[in-house]
Length: 158
Length: 120
Image (cartoon, rainbow over all chains, first blue to last red; front, side, top):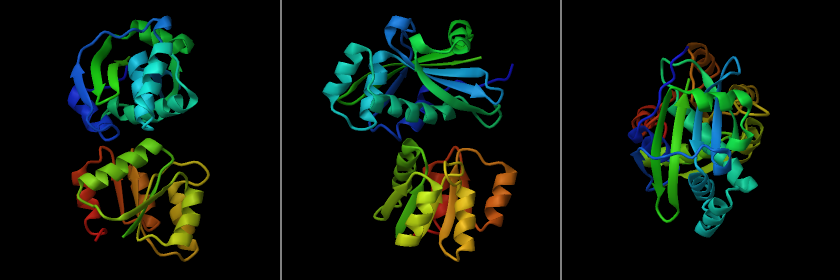
């Protein structure tokens, strides 16, 4: 199977820090990937259409990033995290952010992949759910944004 | 200088703008559009000094945009900023008149290297 890289904390800061001022990233964290957890995933597919990588933001982080990207009020992010639901604007923003995250699971030697779509855990297509349950290669990170708060980001590859 | 950023990704436009700042290219009039067709109209209307364009975009690709500008006789300094750059893409870009093609992972340093000669 082709090798796709996993990022480290400095690479995440280097890339997502261009979108979010003051972003702090630390390795580690516990990611709630249960359907009730309300996490959002970017599903990255190979040219064959097969999912080969996932990037997940837990409910708190998805609300944080989804709001901060458009500078929506902090209260909106907290309400979305509590409800475990994102508005349409926040989902669009998650798609933008996950598209940028494509660059964190590829390098000069890895095969081509692209963002297919973003999904909440409970709505993941079966092949992506299978990858979520069977990936042998994954890393978690704790992200914090000034004022907004944060949550856990996870990367999984085949 | 008037700089036009053309990319269908809001996030990527934000990154390009921030990388320009980090590279020291500040104080310029930066505008942005999200596809090639809008860019063609914007370039004809506002005559920017420099166009930084993505390659793949809806409605009109970056290469089609450059070719349209050329066939319409519009002269503008034009370069690509794209996440992927194959030798074939690079050859097509330069053949169509692009001044540079910056590919990932682009950094303030790579912006300085490629844009230093074009941004005053």
